[in-house]
Length: 404
Image (cartoon, rainbow, N blue to C red; front, side, top):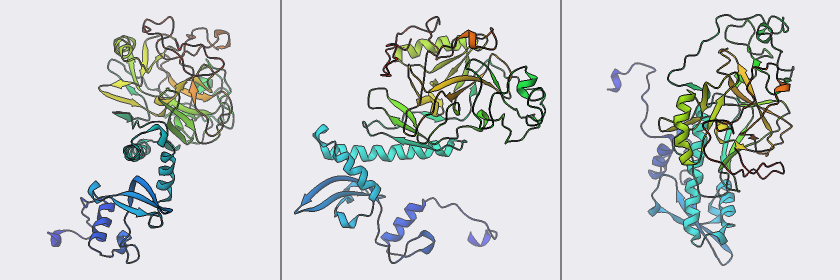
């Protein structure tokens, strides 16, 4: 068969790169292309550490080797191991010894959890289309990645909904920012300063440059459409609030942080799903009630899977550091705004990101009296979707005790 292959043609190997390296080491063969040489042919990769003991001041670790079954685990002295990161996390787990009677079992479960979370982290970053990188961390319990979660970068349109894309474009925002660009043509104010920070009050709509505009990618009126620009971490909270999101770098006040995405559905479908979610004790329905309550964003369960981006894991706070804005780009149907979160204040690295699930906007601050004052998740006090009163666990001094 080989002689029939054309020059330059390649065949995909069924074995992974790591598997091929292991095969070389087992056969004691050197392979420069795989990075296996005489110096490291006897080096094997530590998958995780299972147990620990100390004999006459000498530390030993029970090693699970990558690519080998548990029956091949071996006890190794500390000086044989070069896996600094794994050792550091292992000893951090050892500090929780008093919480787990069966320490060895816990250490194995924890190591397997870390491996699963690392795989999930890789999957999230492989699917993201934005600049900001995602990390995942759970130092609280043994919960692994959420089941059936599918990362998406843009919202999906449900059955019975048609989006009318813009028919015309506008002038260059840099040349005619007052009357010729998208906001000006829509009789609205230019939303951003030259640093990309929103300068409109909450409740006022934001119109960005669209696919038909003459302005380029660097136009100051293209902010939300560029996606998440900050490195963020999905982490397990230690106070019973499940997963949360924190920033890994400083976020300036009024800067765009992320968009809330899911499936856009009709209010009738949201009512049906809301009854199911109420029984589960959770909901991710977000009313798109900028002008009227016809549609809802669902970032919870769509056909058996959970669709959303990192905003899916952002928790509620009665004193939030994120504010909701309605965004219009290619779709100018005011009944179907995109939902974007902007920082209400400077958010320092390591701080959790939160928004108010029952966010209210003062109608006096709004540019148009046609706007609805409710911007929170579906289930506001006057909403027919509300059936369950949910206790708030935000822990802030401004806590209202209940989400709804």
